[in-house]
Amino acid sequence: MLICLNQNQNLVCGTENQDKAHYCRLCGQPLRQTLQLHNPGAKVGPYRILQLIGWGGFGAVYETQVVARPDVRVALKETFDSSSFHAVEREFRVLHNLCQPNLPRYLETFVAKGISYLVMEFVPGQSLEEILKKGPVSEKLALFYIEQLCDALSYLHGQAQPIIHRDIKPANILLTPKGLIKLVDFGLVKQVGPGQTSPSIRAISLPYSAPEQWSGGTDQRSDLYSLGATLYHLLTGYPPPSATDRSLNSSDSLQPPQVYNPEITPHVAQAILTAMNLKRENRYPNVELLREALQGRIKRSSFGTNILVPPASAPTLGPTIRMAQKQPSFSQAVAPQIAQVQPTLRLQGHTRPVFCVTFSPDGCKIASGSSDQTVRVWRVAEGKLCHSLRGKSWFRAVTFSPDNHFFVGAGEDEIIVWSATDGHLVQRFAAKTKGLNSLAFSSDGQLLTLGGNNTLICPWPLEMNASGIKVILEGVEVAAVAFSPDGEFLVTGGSHQPLILWRVADGALLKTFPDHSNEAYCLAWQPGGTILASSGPDSKVYLWDIFEGRQVLALQKHTSGVRSLAWSPDGHILASGGSDMLVNFWGVPNGQLLHTLRGHSGVAWGPNPTTLATWGKDNGIQLWEVKYK
Image 1 (cartoon, rainbow, N blue to C red):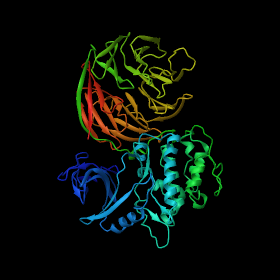
Image 2 (cartoon, rainbow, N blue to C red):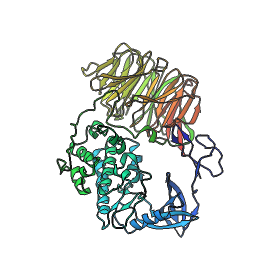
Image 3 (cartoon, rainbow, N blue to C red):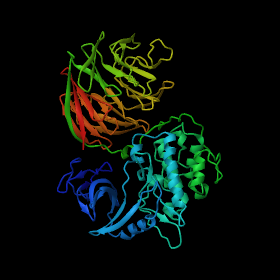
Image 4 (tube, rainbow, N blue to C red):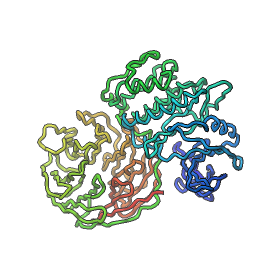
């Protein structure tokens, strides 16, 4: 296979192509810069390639089977540098006698056609880097991972000639389906002892590498720095600044982790910052003391200057706004590739155009609102109509409550709540805002926001006379509202106004953003991330990093206004529906157009990434199955 190495906006395409291809099947560019890798089925020594696991600048890793024993799976590491045989031999010599549950077994090394190969235990599962694409993890779960890594480092550092990994980072930590952590990729391994040498500093991972990896003299405390940096990323969603950047500034640019996640307990934050001290002598001298500090058994650092950690409180919001949860940086995500979008069921019943469609949280039902003054609810599996419910006006917005107990419809000036179980009327309110255009629940189901001539944030269960209702924008028509994934912030957009970021707790206006042709039709916040998609009448789809205050991309393949936006559940694909009756699918982060459907202007994604709905002027709703490559 050929890996496309063409670059777009400083990102390598990385798409797999057939050996004889002349143009990349994703980016469409000529395949002048490529990487030649083995195809599935190819035989390398006594092993047969099953699939590519991953590749980088210095090598690739494959899942393979032993030809003589097809039921046995191993990982085969191929090294691109033909002169690196001695380095591979050295790695194998250091590691092949090790036996510890959190380390893979090293089985053999060999050379085939001038290329060095290392054979290792095959570890199923996913890396912590992949897990971080969904956002930070809970402290309890992160410490569960780190505890196992402490066991691995205690074993490595405790050898007669201590073994230093020197490349601990989320990408090199695998989580098996049984919850076992495995520390992999010992390409930068160093063994401490007489006559021992170490490879160069190539491939240093900047956010996780200790400063001495540039100048030499690494030891066990270098691994503790990397472990602390990894835990920092797991708990905050932010990779920390590199040690070189931190060293260049007059004041350390490393923010305490509680700035981004105020729920981190103080002793854990203290342990992270001590482990990541730029001076080795101020770090923990061994992994066992770091473990004790993470468990709260060391109350104060005795290794150099004590590091002060701020109290657990909400972050201060300034020109650059931070939130407690954030995915890895926008440029690190990788969008899956769509192979096909196939029609499954057609839902027919509305007598006038459909304005809005939403899936229930469990994906079993779909609700639609129309200008025929009805809301209809269908079963997704068989397309059966469950309920047809009438209001007094057009329904421009409909949504299910996150607990799946209710669904809510917004008419011109009324809010109607029905039971999601049997469709009976629960509540009907004359809204305190006219011209209702949008509804949105916070992810925890505690708040409902209404967008119209006034923008309201209402406690749920809904009581329109409750004192807890906040009016955050009065007398200005709002067409779209969107909560941040953690529910702490709200963005509004509408006619003749910019996008506005609000803090939910007190309704404070935090920041405004440039408008798009003086109007925003719709907003959609990336699941688990900080990217907001917006669109309006100018035919473009804009992606904003809300908390860094910048526009990331402007996507333009529509020929008229974009009326609908929907993210895939994993946040890697954005679908947009336009008045040109096209539904486009965009890969994030590179903005590549992955697929197009014709005939509809609205799009909604179900909680299952393979289920999609579109609608338009034909009064019907089409369900689709999305297939990925």
